Amino acid sequence: MAVQEHKHTVRDVSVRMYGDGTGEPLLFLHGAGGWPAWGPFFEALARRCRLLVPEHPGFGLSGNPDWIRNVADVAMYYLDFLDALEGPPVHLVGHSLGGWIAAEIAARNTSRIRSLTLLAPAGLRVKGLLSGDNFIWSPEEYARNLFYDQAFAERELAHVPSEQEADIALTNRYMATKLGWEPRWFNPALEKWLHRIAVPTHVVWGVQDKILPSAYAPLWRERVAGAHISMVEGCGHSPHIEQCDFVTAKVIAFLDRA
Image (cartoon, rainbow, N blue to C red; front, top):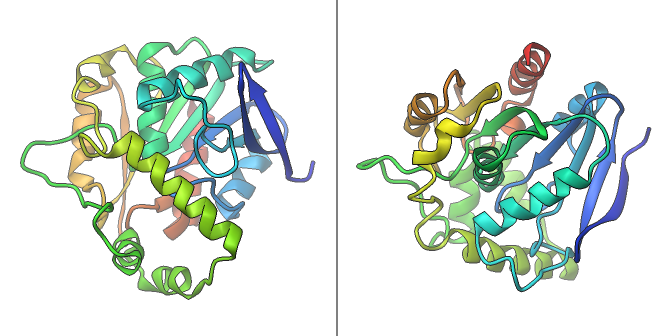
């Protein structure tokens, strides 16, 4: 198969979605930056799985129904999304905001989930360990704080967005603010329900993450029974991009075990 981009509709919501690969289904939920470009991490996953990468409702060019007001609503949308998929349960992978959404889904119902992989997930807060505040950073501060290796930041800053890309970025920022503004990037009630996640779980975190501190990782291991933690040195908030080969190997090894 080649990468396919199409509209996918569940209930009254139509979203953009990439699809590629065959075999076990894997659903990837993106972070607050919006629908990601198709890169080496996705290419590797699509060689092993039937990979699905939707754009969240309210982001980019996807539908934005009035009833989606918070992360819990997005999680319920994805439960409908999973119910509508044909085939076996999915491997669920989420990055940052997408990791938070994935955890909220799994805490509610894992009947359509085979395994859970969280890449630097939002959703929890550790008292005394402050997260970065991307809402007050300038675009340059955000890019530099996103990555440990500043070569990635330089490439991001050198890109001149088209008019459509600028409009999409503004839409994404609005929706990310709607979901993550108050309280900042976590749900105070989530921690007490994580014990309900009863599927193999893997948490991957960049040691030098300046947005969500890697010191949050032990709390996920404490609250999700049997969760495995992979710490990634020389890495900021996007481990699957900044340390792609290492993280891809870790994720695929976990999927094989799961």
